[in-house]
Amino acid sequence: MSKHLKVAIIGAGPAGIYAGNILKNQHPDVEIDLFDSLPAPYGLIRYGVAPDHPRIKGIVNSLHEMLAEGTIRFYGNVTFGTDLHLKDIREHYHAVIFATGAIKDAQLDIPGIELDGSYGAADFVSWYDGHPDYPRTWPLVAKEVAVLGNGNVALDVARVLAKLPDDMLSTDIPANVYEGLKNSPVTDVHVFGRRGPSSIKFTPIELRELGEVKDVDIVVYEEDFAALPGKDSWFDEDGEGVTNQHKVMARIMNEWRERELTGAPRRLHLHFWHKPVEVLGTDGKVSGMKFERTADAGAGAISHTGEFREYNVQAVYRAIGYFGSELPGIPFDEKYGVIRNDGGRVVDEHGKRITGIYATGWIKRGPVGLIGHTKSDAMETIANLVSDIETLVDPTEESVLTKLIERGVEYTDWSGWLKLNEHELSLGAADTSHVERERVKVVDRDEMVRVSRD
Image (cartoon, rainbow, N blue to C red):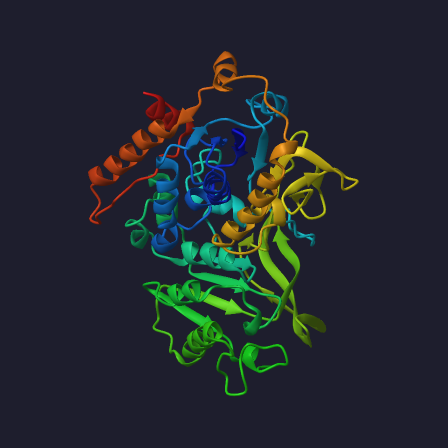
């Protein structure tokens, strides 16, 4: 007879939900409690993906089905280390899986990065996605903006900054975010990458969507394509892509090279071969950005040219990657921003396995890969957990909810999320703007909890 398991998962984003779903399929005799510090589930999908990405957010539908089955019980507004401790986990569960992701911005150590007007992309994403723990306003006062990075987050940030706010009304964008973007004076958004066009980390969908933004001209610079094709380029000798995906991306970029500017009120510039050197400032505020031109050194590396350029910008957003956050009592690798682990099994600083503690997702492997990669990642972690079943220590206490109630934790649950979901849909239906809106996201944490618990 298989052993009955009780497992806690910390983090209700895709990584945590996928892990729970895989676990229940591999070991049906299991109770799974899914905890999140936010009152609502879905993590990165709800608070880390730009609101004008309906196709990506369609993943919510499959995540919803996994939670609606009832085997995975969602409890929100519960913070690990404050409301729920490792000691509680040990007493109530055979094992715990940490799936807390990576939500902090990676640091960029260059002069001027601390100036007023220099921001981390993760903070801006949290603002425009209505994260309840972030300010309701954002200082959108710059006419010219620099975005540092060549990944999807950089592209999301640039697109949201450049896009006319009325074109965002068909999304779940919160009212305060719409008002902030509406008052933005931005005319030019510059995206800078250290490497060349063949090294961009954008997906073809992201790249294609960028060129379809209404009333925004895409500007590329022919000098950035002069070095193509290089030894490691995904452009071939005819300027086309090597793989099918690369062919699509090369075709899009080549179309932009031929496209004439329309005189649109806003422009989105793509710059390559630019390494950030310094954020320039005047009176403590960002007034420009200094770069060194780089060159292809082969094998994905770049070389320095000694040629420097400066651009007038009044705001800088660094989108050079995310970094995980340390959790109380859990071994953490400060260099890579991940929980120390071996295939998802958490280990101490000496590499010794810690019984009953596991990790999955970005907090396990770092913030790389797309959302779909978390499925295969979770499969490894769950396979190891299932193989460890006989070594797991039986819990000594019953439901942890009793302890949360004693501590005065106003936790939310799945039925509460359904109430909040209906409330947000009703706000969208009642919106009086000229665009039909499906949903308006609730931003205030207290309101989210109140609606969920009423």
